[in-house]
Image 1 (cartoon, rainbow, N blue to C red):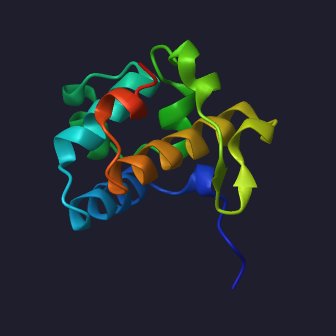
Image 2 (image 1 turned 180 degrees about the horizontal axis):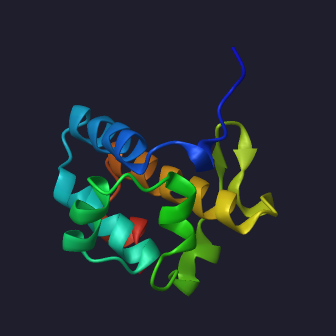
Length: 116
C-alpha cells in the first residue's frame, strides 16, 4: 500500500492524534490548542470549526492567518529530521507543530514551548 502524503490527510484525524499524545502525558486539549494558536494564528474556535470541515492538514497550514515569526526558533529533531533544515515551508510548519506538541508531552513549561 502506498504511503499517503501527510499534507493530504484530514486535519481532524491528525489533530486528534496530537491531542491524544498530549493527553496521555497529562496535558490538555486546551494546551494543544494554545500552541497551535501561537504557531498558526488560528483561534481555538477556528480550530474547533476546522476540525469538522473536512480540510486537509496541508490546507490548514496554507490557510493559516499568520504564522508566528518565532517559529524559526523551533529547532531539534522530529521523526529523525532536523526541523530547521526542512526546506518546504508547509512541511516545516507541520513539523514545528509536531515538535511543539512533543515538548508539551515531555512536560516543558508553556513559556519554554512558546519561546518566551
